[in-house]
Length: 428
Image: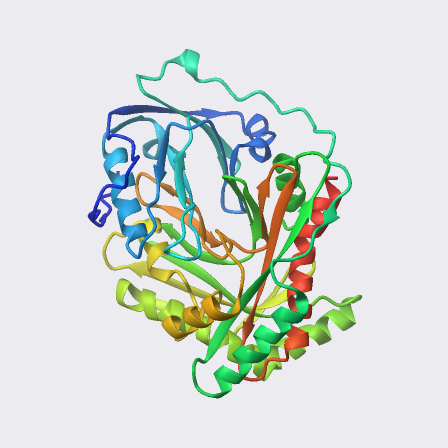
């Protein structure tokens, strides 16, 4: 395994599992059989780069709240993986043990988690692998594919139960944010809102994952601890020394036809307001990665990323690490980017606390996976919902700058919320 620099934990969180030896075994399996199961995982990460699905829990690392939570979590995970006896996996070109992770937006909020599944299916480049993790050496009898999940009957009609803050209150918050930005309190602040939905029967997470993966194939579809979504924004990807980020900020609707779609896209590329929202997001990623990489390559101008319901300004950032750092550590260093927090960071977060009036939970926090070599991918948890049986909370946000119009920002959040609303309605 590649040596990965892991920060030392400041303290072991209460309830943390003891570091004991575990065994993992990885074998290559039929790709078609594996691909048919990846959307059924209790844990999911589905992207063009790799599809991962996990079942059961070999290890759960509770992440204590606090400013050093990423460093502590990375160090604890490294301790457990250091005594993991892995047979096969990355050394043979496949995918070995992988931990799924999801973090709250607020460092002082509880609810973050890292889970190493007992059974993992990984698909990449037309090949597939099965990994089983146990508390004893894994035998051939343990290497069984999970049973296919029967189709659910649907949750029934989706009903809407309002928001934590009314639309009028949210518009007022945006207006107050604009005034404070114009007064020099900040350059940009991202304000989020939620929407509560419910049904007669519990929502089917597998059906939602399937619908999102189909509707938003270019996004990062995820499922962990009831958080389900399809994010277009790559916070960080690390593969060996190579790292990559995709920064999104600035949004416009899609057109009804090719001509109107192209016009809306060109207007977005030329929008002073949206460029003012985009530039700080790129700068925040550049500022974090610049000292850590060699040859940082940042697109000179943003391009368009078109999704089914909206289009965004997008900037690619690439480089090579100057020393080993895990994807989990890099995600912690980058969070929160100006794309979901604002700039300057401290001032923007203070304004969010004062104006937003909702608990974001894990919305806009890092979500993804990391392996024993420190490779992995983390997205920003956008276009997502937190499931709780027959209830769910949907989230969307908008970047506020000096030229923002409150009504236009509200409409942007409606467009973004529509992505998850459509998924719920399609699986009812």
